[in-house]
Length: 93
Image 1: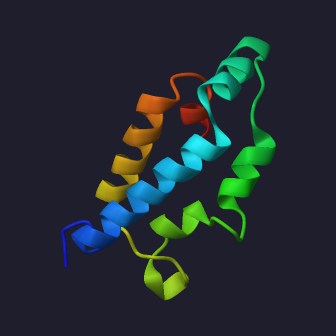
Image 2: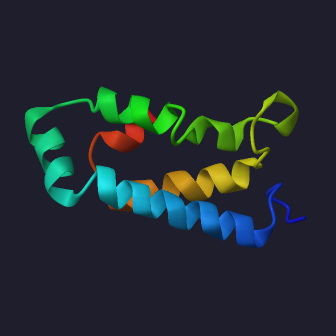
């Protein structure tokens, strides 16, 4: 078990999956449009937190139905998205 609560391979798989989701849902032209038009992507945020993706489950303890990842993996997720999305999206996390 890694210090982040998840084995290293699982952490890598999660970060890779999040990168794929990010590229699919938030290509650069969409991010630019959000910033230029000052749009908060509520629909997309709800999709990230919905039953198909369930991003919030990553940070919940396993005894409450989550994956039980420690704060280090959360930080890795935020960093990877913040590098990609410089505009308003990281503030919504």
